Amino acid sequence: MEPALLQTRDERGVVTLTMNRPSNFNALSEEMLAALQEALDGVARDASARVVVIAANGKAFCPGHNLKEMIATPSLAYYQKLFAQCSRVMLAIQKLPVPVIARVHGIATAAGCQLVAQCDLAVASMEAKFAVSGVNLGLFCSTPSVPLLRNVPSKFAMEMLVTGDFISAQQAQERGLVNRAVPPEQLDTEICKLVDSILAKPRTTIAMGKELFYRQREMGLEAAYQLAGQTMAVNMMDACAQEGVTAFTEKRKPDWTK
Image 1 (cartoon, rainbow, N blue to C red):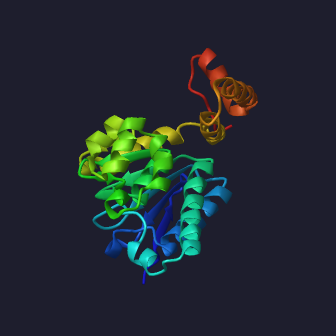
Image 2 (tube, one colour):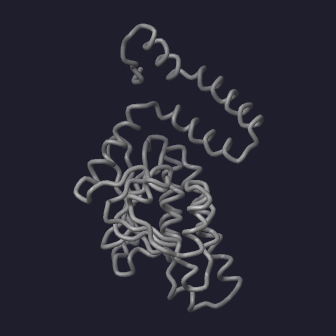
């Protein structure tokens, strides 16, 4: 059997992680979660990695956890372990020093929708659909609600959580769950545009900014400003910022290869 997760890396440092279990629509089984964790940990150690794209093979992006696997082990300890494993993967995405982009097609439901919400950026096919549908099975999508509420206005998030209804890619874009919703044939082109824009900026600047972005979000206003100000001061001392500002004042393009 092929690996659950396929990994490619181009010469620019773009790492693509492709979930590869189309037979179960790329469910977040224990195997898939372990493969994602290993791959993300590898990216975290790779100083030349610049962007991660999470994609999927088959008809769907991800339907969430593997329900057959879950029902086969009706144990509180097992469920606690499984959800902790999933949470570690989600946190690993946030902790990476590089942007993570979800490439979404087909359905993204329950923990699959959680994965989209947890990624820093998301581009979806207009044919994609999203739901946190656990409530339809009597299981409130509690862990998916964590990143969902941090992306989508609270009333929209609550509606999704208590109804389990699907929303379209266009609605997902309007509500802030994805950045772009494009025709299927334009999905890869749109992701390439986003990747190219990121690659044109210094890695150190983006890494510093991403860490600050998520840390300050959980703070009160005064503490957030204090942390942000300190981060900008440190950032300004970086060679990339010095070159960028100097280039602006000299009316030329910055040379971040020096």
